[in-house]
Length: 263
Image (tube, rainbow, N blue to C red; front, side):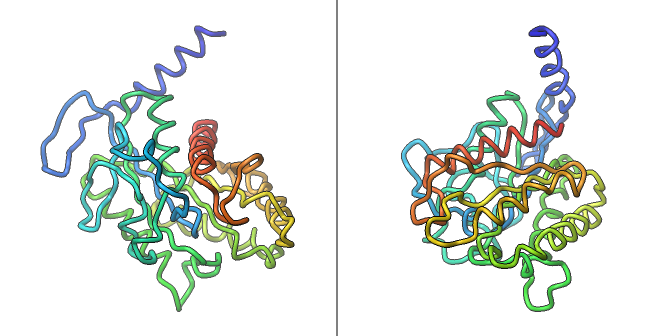
């Protein structure tokens, strides 16, 4: 059993070997083709947790799409180049950091590219492709397409963390989320593109219907294929809504584990 597991990991890692073009136009052989992940949603995906000393510095094997549409070493805050984000001072630690580190830990040598385009305080209706008032959807698609333009990158998945603004609208949430996933997969011409969603905070002692929302979103894999939902059980918040630094790191690790469970 142990040997089979090692062989499986070896094949999974080796299958991504490819030449990669860096932002300076140079190509190098023996480096894995860049796996691009789109990170969208509201404030917990934008990141509101303090960036601590262990969160400083670049992430091994990970790049971030910058404001010029080029790749640079990924450093916090990861939502700093969001074209729909709020002011830079509120962009802090999000799950993307723990996600990328966990992927690198499980699959050493892979090349990861993050496109982070979140905005706090947004309901799922504002992210709809059909929204005529907000451009969050089109902005996310445009930035991702720019990230894939080098020909050496492939879209490997979407990480979604949103729902705090929809706790009182759970009746229509799954229908809207299903439509969002279908639109994204269609626009990226990727019908089986992995989509990972996260639950919101678990503590509903403040009267917020978070557990009702979490009971709804956990059903996503039974409604849409090749999706997964990350539990927030045991995670802590700063203020009843926004996850603290340790919890953001753990949330990111859970996103990575959920993604690899689909692969």
